[in-house]
Every structure is written in C-alpha cells, then in structure tokens.
Image (tube, rainbow, N blue to C red; front, side, top):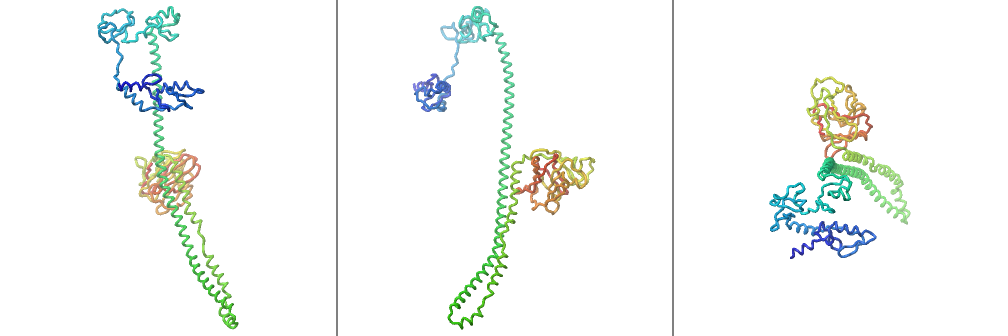
Length: 519
C-alpha cells in the first residue's frame, strides 16, 4: 500500500504521468520540465507567472531548479518495475491466450502457428508481423486497406480514396514503390550525413589538437616565465646588494675625514672656551697693572687666520657621495629587462643543423650535423660556398620570426658564435665571423676577455663567462640578435640592433675543442 502511495506521489500534476526531468519551483511544487515550460510560455506578460498547483504568483519568470532527489526516486521506481513487453495473442484461441506469429490485415485478426497453417493463402490476405494496431493499416474513412501512396498529398490511401475520395485524380503509386523511392532518398541523405559527420569529426579532432597545442604552449610559457622571474629575482637581489655595498663603502670612506675633523674642531672649541673665560675675567679685572701685564702673554690676534686655514684645508677636502658610481652599479637593470623580453617572447628553440658543404677544411662536422670541432686539414671539394676559415654555416636560414638555440662549448678557448648572411665572403679576412657588415658574433680568444664583433668593430664585455653554454636569440623583425650566458642566474651578454637585409644562418667558428648545437 505504501508503495502504491509513493508511486502516486511521483505523478506530474499537469500531465498525470510519472515525472520526466522533475523541476521544482520556488514554492516547492514539482512538475515535468516540458510541462511547466509549456504552462509558463502561456503566462507571458502582461499576464502574471504563477504555480499551476498552488497559484502562487511570481513577479518574474521563475527559475527552473532540477530536483535531483525526486529524479533519483523516479529512476528507482522505474528500474524496479518489470519490463513488460506488449504481447499480441491469437484471435481464435479463446480458451487460453496463445502468442500470435502473424496478423492478417484482411481478416483483421492475429494468428498463432496452428491457425496460420489453415489460414487462406490468397494474395488478398496480407500477413504482417503481429500487431494490436491493425486499424493503422486501414483507411480511417473507408475502412479499406491502405494500398497506395498519394505523391501530391504525401499520404497513404486506399482504393476508394483514389477513385471516389478526396485523392481522386491525384498521382499515386504503390506502397512498395513509394517505400523504395523514400528509401533511396533516405540513403542519399544518410550518405550526406555520414560525410558531414566525418567532416565534423575531423573539425573536432583539429580543434582538440589545437586546444592541446595551446595547452602545451601555455604550460611551456608558464614554466619559462616562472624560471625566468626566479632568475631575474636573484639578479635584482644581487644588484641591490651591490648598490647598497657601494653606498656603505662611500659613506664609510667619507665619514673618516669628517670624524677626524670633528675631533680637531672639538678640541679647538674647548681651547676657545678656555680663552673666552680667561678674557672675560681679564675684562672684569679692575686692577690696571694686572690687566696690562697679562695682555702681551695672551695676545691671540692670529686665531682667526688659523681657524680659516683649518676650515679651508680640511672641510673642503671632504667629498660627497659619488652618485655617478652608484648609478653605474645599476646599469645592469637594462640587461635584466632585456632578459625579460627575450625570455618571455622568444619562441621555442629551433633545430639547427650544420651544413658540411660550407665547412672549412680545418673543421670537422659530426654525423648528426650538431657538433663542429677543429681537425687536421681535410681534402674536400672546392666550392663557392666553402669557408677558408675553420667555420661552418647552418643548413636552415631565418628570414622572419623569433628563434633561439643553444651552443655548448667543450674544451675550447678560441671560438666564435654568431650569424651571417649567405652572401658573406668565403675567403680572406672579411670572411671571418664579425669582420664585415654581413656577420655578427660573440668571441672568446684564449685568456682575453669576451668580445662581440660586427663590421670589424669590437666591444669588450665587462665580465667573463663562467658557463659553458651560450643561448643565441634572434628577433628578425625587431632587428635584434642577442647572446645570453646560461649560468645561474642567466646573464644577458650583448644585443646587436640593426635592420636585417637578408636571411640569416647560424654560424660557428672554432680552434681547438668543439662547439655543439643543443637546440
């Protein structure tokens, strides 16, 4: 009994059927989603929205809130009910129900195996799968079998409909032919839908790939920025410490003469205080003999001159803080900012491969095209593109975009790393990297400081490089070629700024040891 009561509570008050997607209004009453939507659609302004159950009114269209608990109850009740399949029984087995195997449209009856054997085999008797809705196969007006299809009205009709009914004179065809034609159309539509589905799936796959690519790029950029700003933070902290140390050093250096001068001035002030007291006593002495006898011994007419000498010689010898020197210690802030720009906006590292066809005879290239090292003179074919120096260009050229790659230095104290135009000379001094207007390089030569060179103009870097890895960054449109030391922290070494006129090739030159392209 309780189960029956529960089942009644699960009926929608509008359609009186069990809830489908139950929705709860603010007043607490529940309805099927489709039922309450239809009711609310009829209550459009200027009418007032109200609950169909309790008539509570709402100033605005009420929000539809899913009732998840009621939905679970409905699913539980439905799953507990047996799945009863509507079964058709034989019309002629009246004593006990026997499942039918066929239904006859002419006889308007269903037949079991036994009665089917004795059933008429005439063509007028049309047998179909067992059904309890035989009236659907007959004309609702003339109660005759539907045998034809009216192409003008798109309706199944009987014989009387075509002769004396409302479809008289219309173009008709048999149900079988009409079904075949419809089936062909459906097959064409199906084929088009399949093609559309395949294209849609390709688009979905393409979008998913693009999404994954964006996610990978975002993750890579996040990691790169995180590492970059950690390094920048360390650099700024070191820079702050250096600037504060310089200020402290100058302060202490300036304080020493000031302290010494203060001591001398303090002594002088005490001496003057004693003399003042003495002269005040003398001025107040009524005895003229005493006043005249002590006057010569205490004459201090040169006091003013000695004080001026002390002030000029010592006070003007004290210097101020050297703000210019302190500012110089902060000049590397621009390097840090350049590091930020390159670190964030440079694209992924490119795969640079060395072109052995351009390699000089005193340089050897590894089989993977990644490493260049000095070797004994090799006999190679003489070509227009081969360098006279132990120098080699990359196979790939760069004529746009932002790119970066890294070079690892192994046991070499004399090398050049940079880029050049393909039109660079291949012989003579001008073919050396950095010795003409067509090439730029970072160079190390034995124990000398590191230098950068372009058009034979050399700039010595202020500090040596402690790391064995150099990053090269190219921003073609901005006309910038930058070099970074991949130490801890990363240091910006130098940036060439120009307008590039030709494609650029990565270029290496080495004497002793090797240079390896890392990416």
